[in-house]
Picture (cartoon, rainbow, N blue to C red):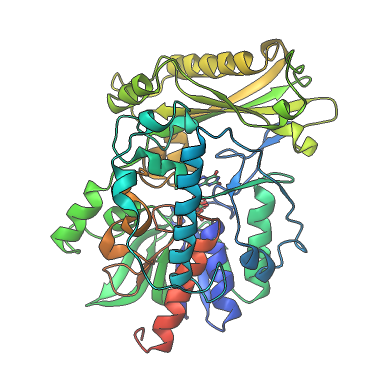
Length: 458
Ligand SMILES: Cc1cc2nc3c(=O)[nH]c(=O)nc-3n(C[C@H](O)[C@H](O)[C@H](O)COP(=O)(O)OP(=O)(O)OC[C@H]3O[C@@H](n4cnc5c(N)ncnc54)[C@H](O)[C@@H]3O)c2cc1C
């Protein structure tokens, strides 16, 4: 059987692309290497009765029209609005709103009409003003430490990462399941347990993909939701692509890795004196003494002495993530190396990082330590093996001026079409990846539909 489109990866973006294509009469198939779909939109019971989403607690906003088109409310998706994250300054806020507005206008040109706003003619970005700025100059906030390098010009752009969407009731896995049901209901085929190993072509024509079990899926086009490096450097033979493209992809910079500690607590921590009840519901940033030092440590493949941390009592927003009377807490540590300079992630190193995360939790919420029943640590190599994110970089590439917006992942690849005919890129390395959940999948599907309609895909 030959499909119209094979989509690599069954995360939010792949499932959204499949649903969008199937609703418009094409035959898409999703190949997901894990036993279940969802990718980073998954929820795990990490200790009996205690659940958390292993990769992130929140997701970027889903555009309202996509939410409605996939009937996500009927499928049980309830989003808790994101807690406001303290703004570094009014000036930074104004820049952020102006540039998000421009990003949405630009997005409207590659997304179906009316999804964000009316299509608008292209205008130059207000790049120079932002590119000259360092994050250190604009703010001392840690911003999770995963997206910014305070010593790098253009880091203020990291503040542009899409408007927060919030937590999904029941964990992000609910969203993954709802998207799968939306895709299947319209006729898309979703196949789990299939790892794609290569993209097959004859001349310039896409034939389909090869799978780890030796079989193949025939398709006329391929959408990859894997990050840029994995898409081009692992799914093609080293000599199959033009040298310039390979060099461009190799030069794409990754963002620092993230570690996550999922913690089961016997009882919720007390509200610290002087804090309002909202404090417990928000992500609590524990800033290191020097964010520059943390980033420099990461650049030298060392674990920072004080990594930036975000502590989140997820059950304060969603009580169903723990048994009655108990609580679930997560700690996200930024600037964590994938491969430490002094060798692999041994048990000792993991234990040290676990203690750092628990110390951050204690700083944010005193008394947490004595209530810990169980804690599970995930470091960047774990993230890489769980969802295939290169070096555990959940951002799909550094968010600096030269890799953002119209430049993401690189100018010749903007707008989801890639230099390889019939191959489209969605997911975190694509231009829309950082802006909104599902948008990059829908944008890739839209480009595929346009190319089929124009007879460009045979
Ligand atoms: C600035 C920024 C902020 C972000 N903030 C958040 C956030 O707060 N919350 C959040 O959830 N996300 C966040 N993201 C990530 C972003 O939302 C992603 O663009 C998107 O949500 C990830 O979905 P996905 O479907 O592309 O990838 P994933 O969910 O990672 O899905 C990829 C799937 O592909 C599968 N796979 C991997 N290799 C293979 C293979 N060889 N064959 C078959 N299948 C394979 C994996 O198992 C996985 O299921 C952020 C990104 C950026 C850039």
